[in-house]
Amino acid sequence: MATLACIAFLLATPAQRPDAESQKYARPKLLIEAEELGTRKAGDGSIILDVRKLNEFKRGHIVNASWVDASEWAKAFASNQEEGAWARRLGKLGIDTGSAVFVYGDPTTPDAARIWWILRYWGVKDARILNGGWPAWVKAGHGVTTEVKNQPVKEPKLAPESQRLAVKEQMLKWVGGRDVQIIDTRSRPEYCGTKEMAKRSGMIPGATHLEWVEVLDPQTHKFKAPNELLKLFQEKGIDLNRASVTHCQSGGRASVMAFALELMGAKAVRNYYRSWEEWGNAKDTPIEKVKDE
Image (cartoon, rainbow, N blue to C red; front, side, top):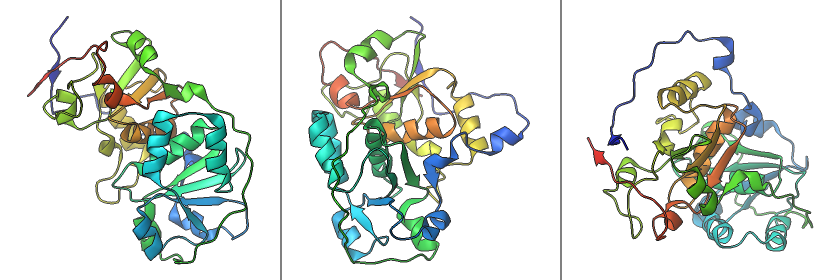
């Protein structure tokens, strides 16, 4: 097998002429801007979820927003996809599969994308991320409150979309193959194996490295413009028409990449949710260590 080099620079690609299609997202309704969210009327049936830390939520949040413990959801999904438990968890927030749900948080963390991904997995079709998160809302000058309102409890019938999730057995089949492109969204030290996050460190053989923060504007923390995302994916050799699976350490950063891929029109995107926390601690998983140059 040819030696893989872990390189910090991007492969050069020919300059491409921008066209109308490259200037817009393929699925713009996965995002909502602060200006649009600010025009929505109370009582329109939509659900707003704040996934920041509880003390931040208590200091001020969007009117009618409900707080979600992102850490609890993260652990719960990793350990148990029991439909009844998740129906109760979503139902307490007034969510069913027909709800319009807007998720926001601290955009320097992957929490909003994780919650978005979990909602989509359980069949919530209209789940969106507030572009730029809480800072974008504050900057737009919209209303903030400390009042907490509980949503009417529902009893949703969930419709899990199993094609959104990848498990270890599938990953073992896809390693080194051509059917699915594996995208590693961790930091470069994690990918190269110099930062240890499990019993074994390194990369899944054949995985393409694209750190999750690269799909975000470093100043606003909003998702990059369509033409920028398209260029980024092309430079990394990521084909939006091919099946993809994203992974990180525990599913959160991978959710950001899954969101960005879907935003740009990718149709077959899975999240290996248990990610390196499982892969790096297993005994039967192939791992490569590559030299950071």
